[in-house]
Image (cartoon, rainbow, N blue to C red):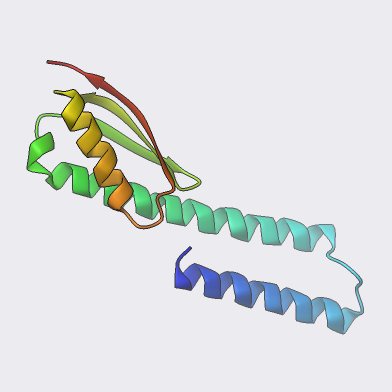
Length: 115
């Protein structure tokens, strides 16, 4: 989780806590819960998009993978690689590149080998 995301989530949580204590509320209203869930999902979606962009850029720039057709998607910090490469070594290399990106927890390798 990036420092910016942590700061936003902390600030949001603190503001919600202050608002509830000022109103004398003993818990979150359903509206507040929905807002907190939305903010969390939005933050994860933005982080996933950044991971996808970085992995895709690194794969595109890698001369070893020239001629490969690799598609990158990310969901909840798990990168999914699909498409095709020339060899098993290229598939392993693409996975290694994905793991180099900060924030990646897992990589699903669904790459086909075409010679």
